[in-house]
Length: 326
Image (cartoon, rainbow, N blue to C red; front, side):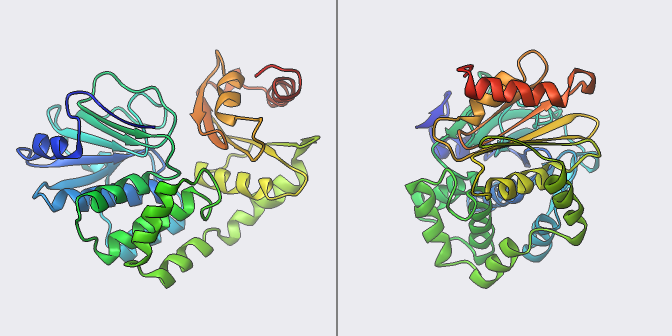
């Protein structure tokens, strides 16, 4: 259900609230993926229609070549926070993430808005909150702003948003809703579709094949569940891609992947209606970490690697799924 709360009860209220600002900052989640960057870019361009200057800022790093290519080809400028002189009074809008989540760095500025599609705990201390968990992609929410305000999208915006929707819904097969289809159709009429197809087809590198090989040779399988731990590390976006790859196996209905990158990152997928991985990850990490997401796609993190034991996580997963622990 769409939830717009706080004293700014509409996008129009948010626009009025921000008009006096010299610069507004749009912050996607850490290690931003296609949907996060597309949503940030779309919101920036939406604000421009109302003469609100916005800059995209991010923390950590942009890991995937496809995201870097998208930014270069469409002229999307995003600045690492280390290169931004931000003040405490500067206004920040979070996109594709929520204040208080472990994948959102708490910057020095004032977080006044959250636009997200994940199942999150709604923050109490922001002026504007637009959380739509029924949407498969944050890009679909941003597209709705253009549609509902009858504002023409540029081809670049439509192209970016269409890529974001494609990638976060696994080509309209995961957690997709009629709202995503509406946004997708609207973007399709405007976007550079051959370019969209090129970006979503070319999403891995030759170097990534080493991780595919490791997954194939080091996985553990119990009935319909596949588990794999990457002690050598694996960047978060690739971990999600590998989760989708494993879930494509006919015999597998749930995937739990984790990697040691100084912290333990998790990527979960499910296509079994009875197994909600957003619930599973919270149970798995109770007392040692944090996690959340959607019923069919979730993630998590353990900050202290000493709290992590892959065998215990695998055994606990099986216990929770098969012994009524959820």
